[in-house]
Length: 225
Image (cartoon, rainbow, N blue to C red; front, side):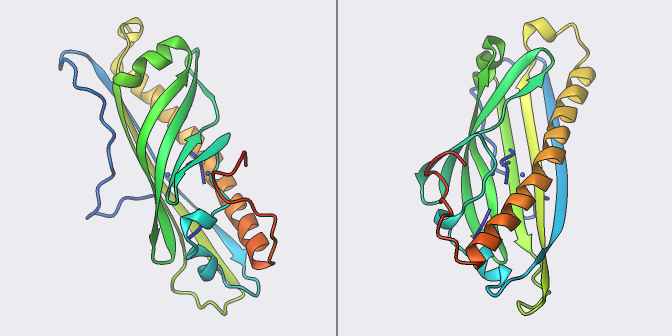
């Protein structure tokens, strides 16, 4: 199947009621330490003009054939698992670069990208948080199963949910928790607003290259995309 971030290629989709996201937990710490929870959820769709090879066929490709995942750099761990160096962004005065390990699972009419682990690079105070936070992310990508493969167009949808829980560093404890959570959630929401439309554009572009028989497509994990 084919993949975005990136994101979080972000990389994020509503979680089915029977399927809970995979959480990556840091080591336990004192319950007296204040924590902040950031969460964001977004969905984007685009209409894709189908070529001679149908979109549904492209969406059923194995993860090893993907050529889209939005990140500065992608490294292959195995056929279905990738390490993604996400673009850097600012949180308050600090620079943050998430490094994600994600697994891509094939699903009917699409795929699901799940976060397996996350570490932070950037400013020293940011790196110091690596043992003090947990994160989850689920990104489902699908085409409209109700449309025939003979239709002239198809709809691609990406749905993403991200949640981060972090211990509040001592330097920030004078700030109300609500203000920190609001700022963190706004950062995640902004990332999704920027990444999901770009992810869909990349996905459509790769489908067009695949459908036209372009042999220059570069599988994930074989270099910078």
